[in-house]
Amino acid sequence: MRVATWNINSLRLRLDLLRRLVQQEGPDVICLQEIKVEDSLFPLADLHALGYPHVRFHGMKGYNGVATLSKLPFRELDPTDWCGKGDCRHARVVLPGDVELHNFYVPAGGDIPDPAANAKFAHKLQFLDEMRDHFAAAPRAGGSAKGKAILVGDLNIAPLEEDVWSHKQLLSVVSHTPIEVEKLAAVQQAGKWVDAVRQVTPPPVKLYSWWSYRSADWTKNDRGRRLDHIWVTPSLAKRVRHATILKDMRGWTQPSDHVAVIVDLD
Image (tube, rainbow, N blue to C red; front, side, top):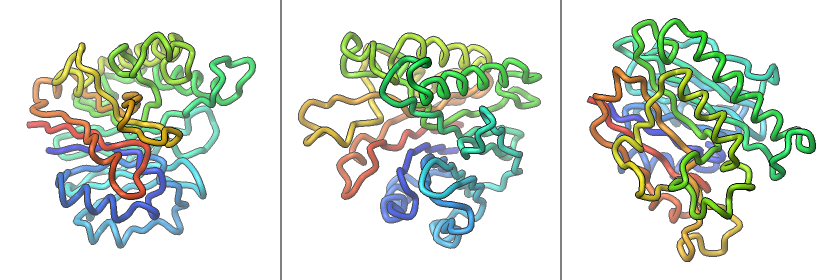
């Protein structure tokens, strides 16, 4: 099973890029974040035409929103309303084999890494705490009855030194601050999650999945961050056969600032 996650940064704007991703990589399951479309306008027919008869979407007008596309049938579960904001940042389904799949879009957190001065950063830290508590309270790792689960999405944190272009320069930049890294690690520990991409490509190799639009030429200095992740529970970790980040997507016409991450499971 090939699973892809991608912050598409507007589904309707980038349907052609999604079509290209499908043709090039053929994922069985695609999890999208920041779809930026309310449910009444969701382009369901277009996704069916791409070969995904099973679609779970949870969106809102203009920003946020997640969608899970699958060639395989799934059972829908109610999303959790994180932080009581109703801002459409989570979708979960159960795939064949009782594999629970979580699709997350964690808040970006704004520019100031101080929860007292920045409500967006406070929201991000609260969101991570609620994720930690949710998975800590689950009956088995990942919240699945048999401990088989996958967590994917734009988690908006680059946890390792090798996940950013400069560890020292980004220590005070939102997405790589010590408190964010600590809280993400607590989420990972609570669910006994394994970072599938880093299992395949461990440090010291640098890996990025996001490059800012602010850079005139993102390829010139390659100042990226690995904000997009695929985690699996231990019972699935031994079934990971391949993992890759599709860096070339950042150079496509009118791209998202994120690229897709793909993991193959046996």
